[in-house]
Picture 1 (cartoon, rainbow, N blue to C red):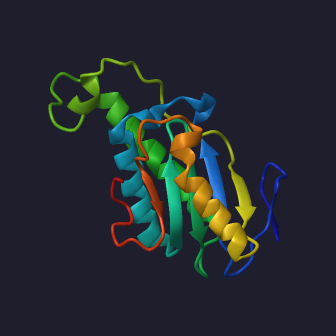
Picture 2: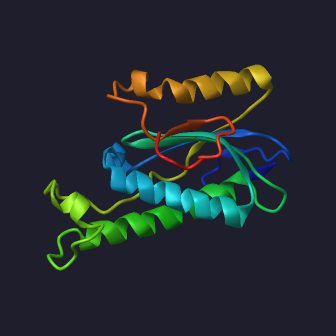
Length: 172
């Protein structure tokens, strides 16, 4: 067992599966933009390869993300989430910074057209975690991920993955 720096107790159990929820700062709906979801998933894929963990499910909502992960031996879930939040913030802010640059005509143009001024991207400090206790708990959390689009009244179930689909990080 370890302590997180804000005194929230973190339980690190070898072989455990964790349900993680993290929000954007002030719950700003950055992930209503597909480009930011794509960047997050690209960073998740890189993190997956570097930190060697399993992902059993995810759902990207406009202002928060749910992940079901099983850390490997070398890195715990706090280290995984810290890396993912740091790199995705960096990459999303690069896009935002160049969105108003008239010379950028490729990927940045996808958000220029909306003429929405974006604040600097930041994640809320810390994150919520839940250790999965048994198979029933796992199934309940997978179902929770699957119905997020209904809970949040979204038009479709985009940016959702549950199971062992080989298209793990693709758009749904």
